Length: 317
Image 1 (tube, rainbow, N blue to C red):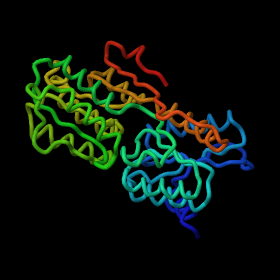
Image 2 (cartoon, helix red, strand yellow):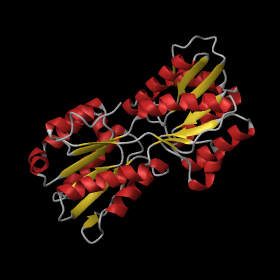
Image 3 (cartoon, rainbow, N blue to C red):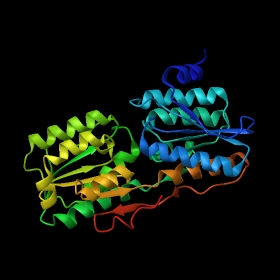
């Protein structure tokens, strides 16, 4: 059994579109991990584009739920060995995926990134990046915090993987926007949960207990909110502080469950990307590249900044 077959049989981490099996071309959409609501939206956009274009298959495959950069690297290497017609990757570990991108280039397989990019020095290895300007996400979170607490205070950033370029760029946007003379990040932060949802809850629980007067938590992703009951149980202990604005909780993404937390007053802001559009455009871009067309670099998809005041009008699919 080859590596791809093993991945399919053991971890059941591939989801195929309903495109006819007789597709002329197979394009792979590779998330950082599977069973993640954010990446599920990108999968749906990928499948919709495949149906529209016709003759192509959206092959959605990635690391398991708690997979990481090493497993993603192997998935991409296997796709190259299989000879797929194009690959789009949300990069979990930029240095590792740069090696895979070089292998794809050597094999003449179009390679693009989405959601999370390669490091600056390696971007010539991919044709384009499709997604958000991630520093702008961080800036929007910081601006929201400053609007809520103009006097400043202490904060903690929680992020995903330390080698994920998109997360690091978001943190850069936060720290460069928050005035250093007003805002101080507490010792032990930033926290890295490696997209492990239960770990993100534990980290958040521990830091709020360690710093009972903490003014804000800024999350470069939305991991704690992906476990709704655990998140609700944790934040309900701080409901009075959150309601009064004494404790500010800000997150990235605008999944339905996250918007519900915003409505309930269990967060004060969500800055959302548009993953459906990322997956959708990835298929069109790979199809253009296969057909010898040039594409723009980067291809940006915009942001949605949501507060309790704008919740009914802020979200775009």
